[in-house]
Structure formats: structure tokens, C-alpha cells
Length: 377
Image (tube, rainbow, N blue to C red; front, side, top):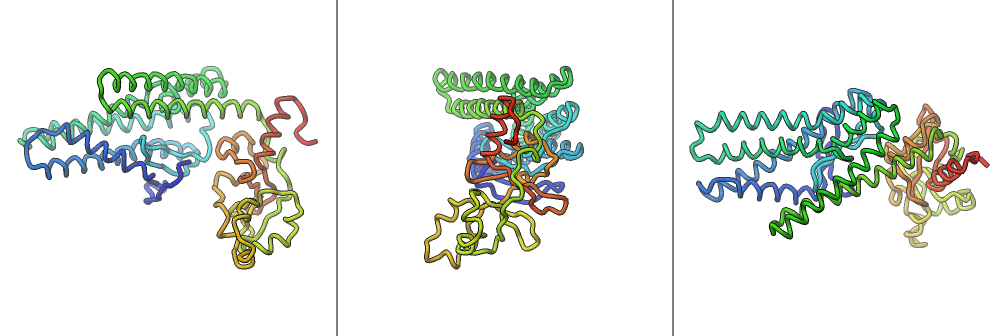
């Protein structure tokens, strides 16, 4: 998850967020387009076209990610949101495609959309050329065409987390029926691809003395880091196997009213319970936040009677609300709890908490499963 993301609205019912680092990307796009424009007309006009082109390209990135999200939602995959950030865009799914065909269709939707948009901008450049003697609009349209086609081609490179890595994963999954093997292979390809991109960036900086190589180095680092994370997720899935949430949860959980002051918590059974993380419930009894002892320690003794838990708690992500019959691996790969801070909250059909799974429970489940020991002692 990208922290510091600002929600900007919804498209087709899907939330769109913008990370502050996108400003750097927008400025870079505008600068690149400015160097591509012919030196005719006023600087004001050139910069206006450059800024407008950068904004349009960001909209094209939204269309790319929106294609992924719409394709996923149509096949039953819950989409949390789309976030635009320094290195482009990312679609955040609350769960994963359930079969190889869905994985393949979702992966191809984005590059296909970018390729189509690129061809449309190319057609616009061809149509505009006879009626735009200055050439500024033609160059801008041509640049948008090249950038969108390049986006489609780059994303199809065979390595996770790129769309091409998802295609590799889907094809191996369909051929072998082994999802873990497919994910591991795609992640390994991603690590190799990341190393190659870093090397290309280094050559561009050292040999060509072009600062754009720094961008490639950053992108390659991101690819390797993401691929390593996907390798870890694949290993986690392997270790957890078919363990269900209900097999490891602590029940019942000790839920606290979100409007309680800190002083009431310290006088309640929570102080002697041995629990370190608590779900907080609203007046209807639904879990809405999480609280840890470390959150309470920030409050001075004089303020404990007046400081409510709502002012200290962390929002409970929708993906952290689970049911007993879900696979622990599915939940843990969506939200990996931090020790002593986070948890998965188990709810019943009425969305009332029935159990809790902490990071300690997750680690114990991994270790005992690996050793072949029963989950419950």
C-alpha cells in the first residue's frame, strides 16, 4: 500500500487515488515533451502544450489501470482502488484471480488498452498534420502515440510484477495446474528483468551521460523489489497450504467500543487479558479500527480520561476483515499484519467479530505447518 495517497474520485465505481510522487512524474513528462516540440511559436504555447500532454498521458495511465480493474471486477475479483504514483499506476485487488484464464485476461487488458490508445493518437497526428502548419500539435499527438505504445510493450516484458509476468504466470498455471510454480517462475523472471533494467540504466548514465538512466535504475530497483516480494508471497502460500482462518484464529476476540476513553480501557478486562491488539467496534457492533497497547502509551496520564480510542486507532482495511472459511494464505497475502500492531478480524454473517488472527498466530501457523505439527496445541 502507498501511504500519503489522496482520493480524487471514482470511475466506473472504482476509487482513484493520487500519490504525491506523481508530481515528479508529471513534471518529467512535461519536460520530455517540451524537448520534442519544434522550436516554433512562443515558449508559453510550447509549455502549455507540454503540460497538457503530460496530463493527458497520466489520463492514459488511468485508462490502462482501469482496463485491468474492470476486467478483474467482471470476473468476480474485488478491486480496492487504482493509485497513480512515481512509476506509473497500480491496481490494488482485494483478492486474486481464481483461475488461469481470468489471470490472463486481466493481465492483457491493460496493454491492449494502451496499444489501442496509442494507435488512436497516431491517427490523430496523421489527421492533424495537414491543418497544423506549426507542427506543435502533430508532435504532441505523435509523442502520446509513442508513449502509449511503449507503455504497452514495456508492460508485456515477461517478469512479475509487470503485465507480461502475469501472462507468464497464467500460461504456466494453465499448462501445469500448479499456481505456486507459476507465481515463482514469474517472480524469478521479474528479478532477472529488474537486474537488466538496472544495468541498462547504469550504462546510460556512465557511457551516454544521460540522466534518464537514473529513471531506469529506479525502475529496475522497483521491479526487483516487487519480484522479491512476490517470491515471499509464493513461499508464504506454500507454507500455509490449505489452512483456514478458523483453524488459527483466537475466539472470541476482545473487542472494545471505539468511543471509550483510554481510562476505561485501562480499568477493563483488556488490561489483564494478555491481548496486544484489539478490534474496535462502532455502536452497531461492526469492527472499524484496530488498537494496540503502543497506541495508548502516547497519551499522557492527565489526558486518559478525555482521549477517546477513535483518536488513536488505525483504520481497519476492508481486506483485513475476513471469514472463518477463507484460506489463511489468501488473507495473509492481502494484508500482512505487523507484530503487535495489526490483525485480521474474523466476522460472522452479520459482520460482528468472532475471532482475531495476529502476526504471532500467522508465524506460528507457518512454523507448525512446515514441521508437520497440529495447528492447535
